[in-house]
Length: 512
Ligand code: AHR
Image 1 (cartoon, rainbow, N blue to C red):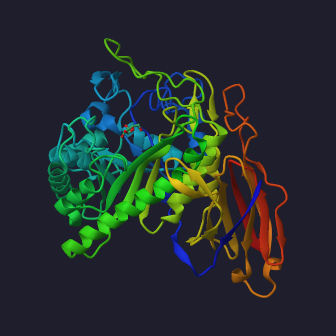
Image 2 (tube, rainbow, N blue to C red):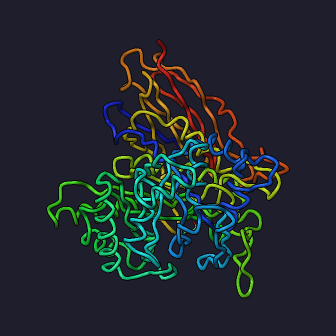
Image 3 (cartoon, rainbow, N blue to C red):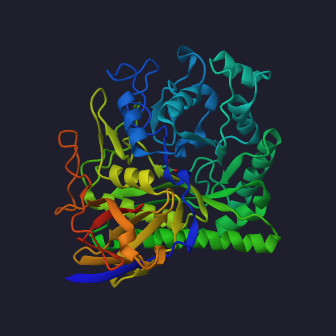
């Protein structure tokens, strides 16, 4: 069956500017994200610092804007000083978050070198699990202070005289979660985060500080956690974090494809809670969201490996290596639509993670690196979402889903105006079985001559007849975007068709 759908846009109806930080990622000392992911001395493509140049090139191609580091759950037991200084002096430690051995042969200075070569902005998380304000101040001094104090001089002695000037700092990780080392009640964490933030601002009042929100919206404390943390330190912080991972469960493709309904509701709830505390406290500023862990954890492609247990404490174990399907890529494209739609309140986002661990990039130790299916919608959205995000009024029949209730078959967002007359539409068909006819009326963009004003400069589709098709090292281009054929511009309307379970990007440009 074919369903008729439309997106209504107006160039004056804007949500806000596209933020480059929406296209962030995440590198954690977990499994093979760092070791044999971004860092592998001895690999034939490693540079003199042991950084894999094949992964650096793919990171740049992915269009990553910022990268959160060093965790994740890992950070809640981490001593940052273990990872700086001469390699031979660095201690090996048990990593209690991931039941592994941390060799500490990669640390802050190497991460900053990697970030510079990858062309990304760093976002650094401090340990508020086993540590507190003093250690946060220490790592801040090491990273950002001008030479002339002990820790800044230590950085200089390690070869980095110029301060790193890291702007975004996370005040711990997922402190609402009972699994987190140092997990504590919201009021207690809120006080710790607030006093750490206030102390850090004594060194630099303009830091951008992120307090932990909930680990996901199904947490029993969701809402009350955010309220308590904000009541403890509203003025001290700039952003609250949000985290979520979606996956297909029990073959329920319809619910999985509609995951952005849940992300929309999650963001709206955090915004509502933040604004409630703002009203109660008589505050002026608005708290923004740092969606600093989001991703899909799969439709069940491949064997992801198992987290070590018992007496086994390996270095860089292979687990969480999800092999992504075409359907997973469609959901990632759809989640990016949700993040863009909330550009007025989502100030930063990080897909978790970059390499191997739930990564759009996969590597073999000592071997190849390739793009997983989810690489493509991220790279294309990052490359072409520019200018202003427009409000998109969606006209679409709904699909009934077990988890999210009715969900529109079509979802879409549009960006407008980086260059004169650049209009880019990102659209997703979330129906497992139905084809969509999509129309986008364009009269509002110009006038009487309507469609004649635009030309299609690019139209791509991510869709596979087998939604469970995957990319592998031997077949790395099995799932890739292909040309979207049959795009028409007639009678001041853009028209096209979208097959079931598909993501598309259509770029228009005004004729000069
Ligand atoms: O990204 C993997 C893990 O998921 C992170 O360490 C943690 O913060 C989250 O629960």
